[in-house]
Structures are given as structure tokens and as C-alpha cells.
Length: 254
Image (cartoon, rainbow, N blue to C red; front, side, top):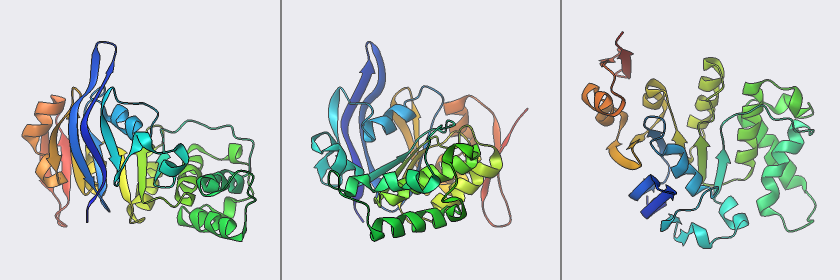
């Protein structure tokens, strides 16, 4: 199957504060990967290094067979799309126009949009259940609707890998589950920072757990989410139960 992203001795600091410390980790193709860990553990910094908002002090990040730092932004945008933390956007564009922006990595300078681009926009909006909003002004949508349109824009890039940088942080539970159900159905490599351990258990194939800039655990949700490990990482007491379908649930102690 191979790996889609690989960290090789990646180190990142802000002045004297070490944020990522000698990371060596491979992310396999076709899986939903959840990044867990307390606030300040390095989750968002790791993701921002992948999508090039931040640059490591040392080490390299491979995207497929290529060092991402040596790729043009346009080339990396053909392989990697991002849905970041939700804020209420004030774009003065229609929903269709926002999603069409996702086609820009595939276009030459000043190349006009064509019928294939419009078909991809429609398909992307249909996947997130927003095709009927295509001509609506983006700024009039609710937070959950806006985030689904931003996901559609990422899908219009047609990349094999999608980064979710805590995209459901400011959404209520209905919109969180709606967005994650869509993501689960996409059959892409997904790398997502997640705060909610039960959501991580429901949607992720593998979990990487971070603490103090290091990856301190990895495996399936069943392997990682033990009461002992959760106590070690988060300093909280929990009970682990399995329902009749065999799904894992975490109960928090008072």
C-alpha cells in the first residue's frame, strides 16, 4: 500500500520552546489517521508543517516520493488539500465560486474554467450535500454549511490526501458528525487532529498520540484507547465499554 506522508527526523521549535522533537513517522495510504493529545502537544504544528504554513527547523517531510519543501505550492496542492479550523468566513462569492477555487492548482495562469471544472464542482457539492446551495451567497450560510462548502472546495482539488486541522472545533455535535460521516465515505487518506476521544474511536482507522512534541503511542483505537494510557496522557479517569456491535466507548468519571 505504501506511505503517503513520512516524517524524517523532523524538529520544530519557537525560540527555546521545542514543539516537535525528532519525529519519525509514516502515514499509510487510504487510512483515516487521528492525531490525539492534550493542548500544546504539537498536533496542529505537525499538520501545519505538512501543509506548509510552518517549516521545520530540521528534518524533512516526504509527500509520496518527494521532499515537500522542494515542491512548488501548486504541485503540493495537487496532492494535498486542507480543511482548517472553522471560522465564520465572509467571502463575497457564491457557493459555486468558492468551490471552483479548488480547481486552481490544476489551471495555468489565466486559463479559463471549462466544463470539466464545473462538473467537478457539482460532484464535490453533491458529495457534501450542498449542491442545492450552489448559487447562494457563501456568507449567508450557517457555520456547519460553510464548513461543508470548504470541504467541497478541498474535494475539488482532487488530491489523494486530505488534512483536517480540527475542522469541527466550533461546530455543534450535529454538524461535527455530519462532516465526519462525509469524510469517512470519501476513501481518501485523511489526517485529522481530534479532541474528542469517542469521535476518534468512531471514525479513525489508526491513532497517533502526541505529548510534549513527541509521538508516544500509535495503533488502532482499540489498541491505543485504554484506561491506563488515557490516564497517562490526559491525567483523567475513564471506563472503557463496548456496545453490542463491538464499538468502543469512553465513559468519563466524575
